[in-house]
Length: 186
Image (cartoon, rainbow, N blue to C red; front, side, top):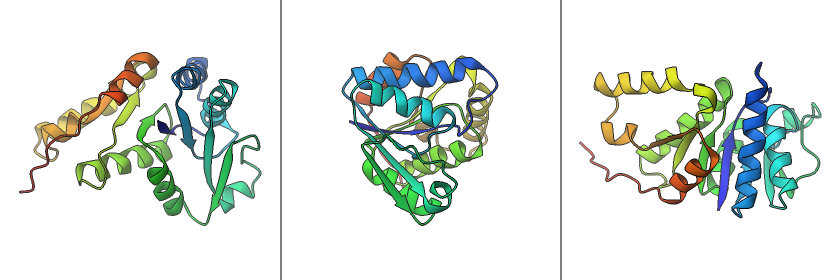
């Protein structure tokens, strides 16, 4: 299984974020899982990639030329694909991955996980989308998603598509056992 991980290009202000990213990458590797990610050496991206590599698994990076040229590309990967744009990056990562997980991050992380989730809702894929909710990082976002559903802008079965876990083992188990919802087009 290849997991696309979306996360910060920064480590954030709390050491628990980097610790959780390392823990998740280590657990992925111990479960025979490979990583697909944004290809950067910085922030939580670099932490999770290094943990998966240290665990002896494959790590596939996808980075736009403009970011590679700023010397942000991780040099120790199994493979690094350099693409022209962020759109190409997201499409290639989606094609390569069997599941999508958001670790703590900023607007780019939100963009990536929400696009993957939207594609799942629309039936473009049947892959699980998850939040690794480190120290409640995503609690307010998840409350807003419930509000969207309650206000009639998001069907409850699509809200329920999202996997939310706080421990790597529970998260990986939920990814493996994911069943996409039946889609109702009306």
